[in-house]
Every structure is written in C-alpha cells, then in structure tokens.
Length: 491
Ligand SMILES: [Cu+2]
Image (tube, rainbow, N blue to C red; front, side):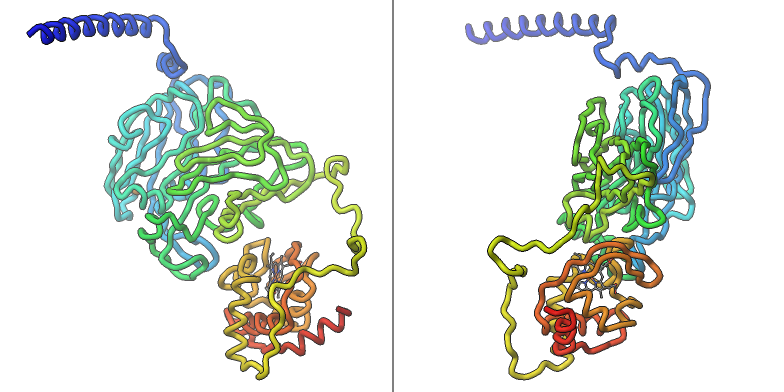
C-alpha cells in the first residue's frame, strides 16, 4: 500500500505544478505577445479589395505601404491540355489556367476571403492547401469543391514570407504532379524593398507514360512518380517556358528579384543562375537573408526569394544545378540582360591561340578505342545500328533522344535544313566542332559544339544513323568521305 500512496501524492504535486506553470504562461501570453504571428493577429483591416492575380512569369503590383485589408481572391480551377515540349501534349490541372498557378500577393494582417471555383467542364473535385494559412489543412479541409461549384473560406495572414500553395485532394501526389501548385507572397508591413524587375519562376517534375520527347498526348505515369523518376523537370510547367522570345529580360544596372518556388512533387531544386551571383537570398522564403550565394536549395513544397543586380550584358541561364535535369529534362530558363559592356567586370576572350604543352608536339584528346579494321565493309543497316550507339554516347546529351535539340541552345538534327542541305558541312561539324552563328530551320544558334573525338568509321555511322532518322533525307555517309574531309583540313 505504501508505495501506491506515495505515487498518488507525487501525481498530485506534479499536477499542481503543471497547473501553476500553465496558468502563468497563459497570463504571460495574454499580456505580451511572444512572436510576430501573435501580434499580427491584432492588425486591423481597412476596406476591401479584389486581389490582382497574375500568370507566371509575372507578379502583381507590390503592396507598398497600403494598410492591411480584406482581400478577395477568386481562383478558378481548369483542367486543360497544354504542351510539355515540342509535340508533347499533356493534360494539366491548373489553378487559374497556368502552371504554376496564379501568383497571389498579400501583406501581413490581410484577411483573405478565398473563393475556390471548379470550372463546370472539369472532371474532378479539387481543393487548396496554402502554406501561408494557419488552420486545418492550410484551407484544404474547407475547400474541397466539385466541378461546377464554389467554396469560400477566410484566413488572416499572420506570417510574412513566400509560400507554396497546392491541391491536396487524393491522390495528392497526382494532383500536384499534374501542375496544381503556385505561390502566395505575404509581404511585411511596408512591403519588400523596391527592385526594378520581379519575376515568378516555379520548378516542377513531371511523369509521362512515354519517355522524354515522345510526341503525342502523354498520360500521367503513377509508377514513375512513386519511383521519383521524372521524364521532365521544368520551370513554369513546360520545357522552354523561359527561353527564346519568352526569356526573362532586364537591363544592365537593374536589380532583379525572382520569386522561386518548387512544386515538386518529388525533387528538391538546386537553383542556380549561370553568370550571376545572388546578392541576397531570403532563405526558404523566410526572414533570414543570406548574401553572396551561388546556388540555393529550394525544397519540394518550398520557396526562396533571390535578388541580384545585373552588372554586364549576358544571357543568364536559370538551372536546377542537378545538371542532367537542366540539359536533359528541361529545367533551364533564360534571363537576357542588355546594355553596355563593362570590361573591368568581364573582358570576354582576350586571346586565342594554339597551346603547346612544354616539350610536346600537338596534343590530342585521348581516344577511348582504337579503330578496329573491319575486314568486310558494313551494310547501311549495320552502319545505322552502330551509329545509333555512337549517337547515344556522343550526341544525345545535347541534341536529345529524338534529335529535337533544346530550343535556342542546341539545334535540332531532326529535319534540320543545315544537315540535310549539305553533307560536307555536317561531316565538317562533327570532325572539327562548330561555333559561331549557325541558322537551323530559320532559328539562329550561337553556341559551341566541341570537336567529336571519333574515328572516321564512327562518324560515318553516326551521321548515317542521324540521316536515316526523324524525317531526314537518308544520306549514306562513308568512312572514306569522312577521311577525305579530315585530309582537306590537314589533320
Ligand atoms: Cu486537385
């Protein structure tokens, strides 16, 4: 009995102590709010206004010094077909008709009246979970809405920051994988510091029934999604959303702010801009600012705000620095900076010449395999077969699986007028490399293709393969033609 009594006593003492401490804490909380979120609850709203929503890569006007208000958001869900890449169709599920969904810009203390509208032509129910919301499911619990219906709920913006929103209807992963995500910004009192240009970029990974580049309408592939093996990793919903005439722009001397989100569903982004350094990064979209950053990690379902000043003219390249995603799956965008050069910051090439290693003659790249002297010449079919292997190991990374290239960076080999127009020039390109201005099918490229260190026979085979594929003119290139080209240029 004795031990039991003792236990009972101990419980009573512990309970009493707990009660005293929690009462004390309650009193403390009541009189002295302990954090921003606590005090922001008391910010009074003035008036009411309809929220401006924008499709990427644009963002609504800054809040500036406006007072907190009742902000009415009308967000319409649309299931619609779009283009993932050239000739590759996909049925996207969208917030506001774009991937990522419409950008929402609020300030701390705003009371948001959120109208989620599901278009009558849609097939499925959806909802929304906004990471800026304090409340059950981030709003998901109150917003499940069937096609042809509307749901309304209210929330107060307690914490400033850049937040992801997404659909949270089962199967959640599939709704996100189909493009149901976007960003909501909660600016601090008085707004973020002014900059010259603001842009909205969001990464997402996509899982299609066909492999990367396979044309036609592609279905969502649940298996690949579960295995986290995307066929596409892209900025703003599709390959090439931010390249060519859709590239972001700025002028020398301007400051640029990118609201960078990552919808996932699976991958984390190593966000990097080739040719710039982030002067400032609001880490994970929160209050903490890091300076002078090369690459910032953007979690799935997370965001970051990056800022930099454009000092010199350049085509800056936005990438996920998990670099195969950039060059092989689409996570590549561009920001064109125009204006006067500043040679003290960047000189360009100042000298070009032959480099001779001390004591050596002209160096050549190590050749992987010695040329095997074949006794019998290959048939065209055999040439195509081994040319395909060469393509897979030497050309595929840049010109892509179906010879489609990458817009503005790597020209297409499929139906290329350059290739089909002149066999000698094509051989020359592979033997010597190619740089400077080249026009392929009306589009200008100004990039560098390194000389391919391949044997005459390998070059003949790969070109024969390329000519026999993707609608090209079926020219048969022979090893002696390649040899002739080499001799012409004196190697
Ligand atoms: Cu949904």
